Length: 263
Ligand SMILES: NC(=O)c1ccc[n+]([C@@H]2O[C@H](COP(=O)([O-])OP(=O)(O)OC[C@H]3O[C@@H](n4cnc5c(N)ncnc54)[C@H](OP(=O)(O)O)[C@@H]3O)[C@@H](O)[C@H]2O)c1
Image 1: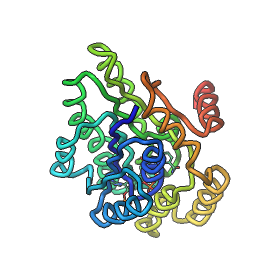
Image 2 (image 1 turned 60 degrees about the vertical axis):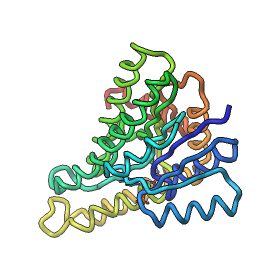
Image 3 (image 1 turned 135 degrees about the vertical axis):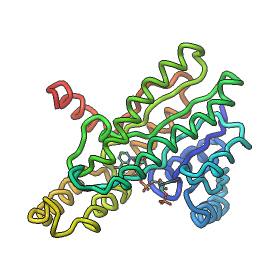
Image 4 (image 1 turned 45 degrees about the horizontal axis):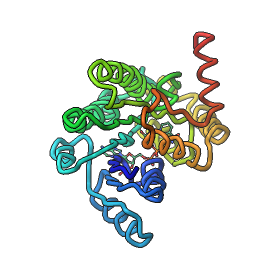
């Protein structure tokens, strides 16, 4: 069945690739982006490829932008937009943590509340939140990002249970990617080195940290987003979505095992 699916953070990565994959499957896609320029670029791309994708600027931290979704009758909201700060919690400026929470948690929840108003009234719809496996096992020097995803992971689980108390037709679910090469991780880990200076507790091991992070993502990252996008498509099309859609499976399994052993 053709659905109307609104996605946030479609300038690149999972958002953009999911928008394209879902449009190719015949859905009507509203692919939103943080900036007007990205919205125009994506609209031009969609037109050229003859894809049923409309775009507009939706910075999820801006209430005026969020209110725009009231103009649409959405079957699925895919809360995909995200940011990630890096650096130790021992010294990261608090405003950086606040910004991560504004985008990953507050912006996404605020948008979900707006979408739910209509979904609850018509007793139909799905809200998906892109969290992360870093929201199940925290990563050192990515504490700010991990905290937001832990918060999202807990909150979404609760929200799902709450909604199911009153209807079984409105669904809430989590998308939990492992490490994928979208450029997101490289941009995030680089952020800490812009503000860490010689007063940092970690300045003596800065080069080692950089190298470790580079190697970690080189080894772990999946080059193509396809396996995750396939899961996102499944979640968008599911009649009764599961709580979690995880990819790649082996990173999901690794996280489960680490949790069993108390990590
Ligand atoms: N790649 C991974 O390994 C990985 C793993 C686990 C989870 N994830 C999650 O997957 C989601 C997408 O990430 P990605 O890997 O596809 O990276 P990406 O290509 O950098 O996508 C992030 C998107 O979020 C947008 N965004 C940032 N702040 C926003 C705001 N205030 N309002 C609206 N959009 C905003 C970005 O827009 P601009 O480009 O304009 O800034 C961009 O389109 C994120 O939630 C991320 O946490 C990624």
